[in-house]
Length: 266
Image (tube, rainbow, N blue to C red; front, side):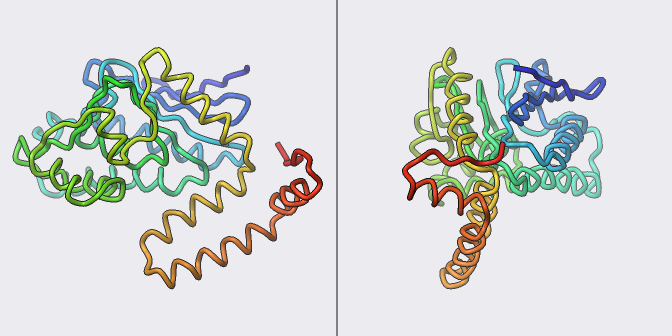
């Protein structure tokens, strides 16, 4: 399969796109445990903007090289500039990256091969789906350094029950991959040698569905979660009506009636 390398020069993030429209973003600063420093945040934002502009993109895989998936923010960078304005700007940039993942019209899958802590755990929580190796651990342990993981708490409490999230946030304790699945932080747990294959299985399932329907669904899923039930039903009804009126649903329903495979545009 043809793969295009979209990696920018001197970037800490590898970026490839295959012929199917799968973008793979790989955190590539293993010596620093792939921390979300200024350079990594900038590279992620650029890559996510590239995906958003790709009308034939189908999904994103967010992976990492090294022992850790991501060890959070770069504390050395943060300590080097002890200024409120700098910290506000840094966390605003990180928030923009997280919201860019949320707002992409295609699913984003975290492919977790190691430790995910603080903003690294946030990154996993912000992705639409997550597959992890069985040896990975997850935590939001900023509290151990006197820093409550406020921004990581935002997607965390939207992934798992509140008291379980609060326990992680105030104790700094880590949870195992199996516990992460039980709490709703990740979807699937596999051995290291099966990680890529399991992500590929998810991708194959996504590719069998029309992009337009997945886009309708992803946008609705997150918007309605923040609404009261009446407003959520109104939005869901409107979304479903628009989806049903779209040619992909018309073809899918007709194919179901005809007992044949839908012929969706590639």
